[in-house]
View 1 (tube, rainbow, N blue to C red):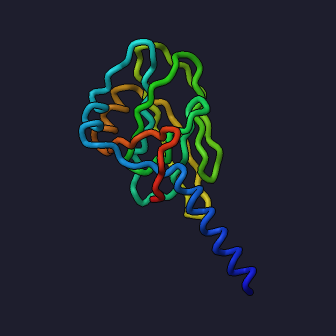
View 2 (cartoon, rainbow, N blue to C red):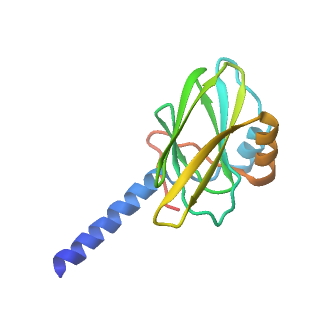
Length: 158
């Protein structure tokens, strides 16, 4: 009985630590306003990754772009990420291992709409490249900017 209890406590602690690795805090209102200017950057491509789905949708995919941890994407939120132009690979880890490979060019801005569905025990995510007009409108309407993960940054569980 003691072994089962100890194992349960150990698993709970490990789950909290692993869950905290990717949980992503909301950015400041100033950073959100600046990101919603949707400006390009010289020598880089800018990619907006966003979820315009409903807060009741479960599943919080952990996003990686070009093997760089971006963070955990919650409903009604987005990331603004600078990438090297060329082939880029977006992957997510929820209940599934979603992926999207796309081409970017320097000085351009790209938008990827992400949806997540599931029941808590399993979830799946889907990626869809959208036009800049659609991406800008959806982000303005629904979403708050999240900070991207930075090496050495402490993460708090949701």
